[in-house]
Amino acid sequence: MTGKTLLVGLRADQFRHPLDLEATRALKQLPGLDVMVRMALAPLAERFFHLDHLASSLQVSDRQLPDLYQSLVEACRILDLEVPQLYVRQNPVPNAYTFAMRGEQPFIVIHTALIELLTPEETQAVIAHELGHLKCEHSVYLTLANLITMAASQLPLGEVMAQSLQNQLMEWVRCAEFTCDRAALLVAQDPRIVASLLMKLCGGSPSLVNQLNVDAFIDQARAYDSLSDDAIGDALKQVRTQGLTHPVPVLRAREIDRWATTNDYYQLVKRPAVEYNESASKGGWRNW
Image (cartoon, rainbow, N blue to C red):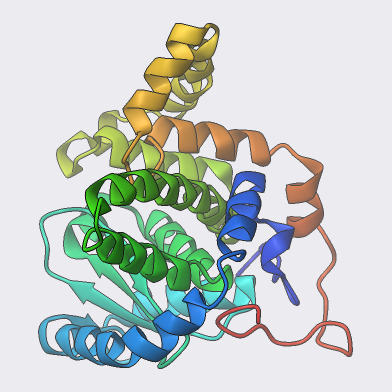
């Protein structure tokens, strides 16, 4: 924790990306759907996925992979969150994800391939990214998005509806990822750590680590803007990202590179330490 600021009383909207804020507000205009997910789907789905990970993954704790557990605890302290469960799952595909639907304790899953690829600091940034989903209530809407898409596909003209709805929802999902990258930066408090993580997701491997150059990747991210200097370039970028669950890594790196130089970021991580009082209360998993 040396030199890191604890963001006591941190609220999601203090770091939420503007695109995420706009898209989330649009989703909240759909009345009753959030309640439907919690009441109809959450109990069964939560129990199924929880049992699945208890059966086939390692649950991280102070007795199991304690270094990784301490990394999780530290990230939660910085973002002012309760500590969720964390699982490590054997999988050759570098990935991490979060499951939470406002019921039982949420949990994060990290694949072994991702841990092998990253440094401990970068792995903590991944954990912080996933914590960002909890802080911003993203997981509820991710489940909601999947449910709506499945339901639409069963209706007359459902395939056309589902495709249109899926495009809209995937746009929201990609906006949410920008916010969670900011959560990663708030924990790392060093934009080069987040940039290095994204670089490795873009084209890294354990055998290439010693040859990777973060500065070159940041320059690459900044150059990405030149592709949208005209209408054709902008259209090509839209086609490239359509249907993806995450923005392309260089675009995410560019956004973090920009936000790390803003006054909003500076005011969060450079502010004096705060103690809990009447106006700053312990953050839960989500901001109700």
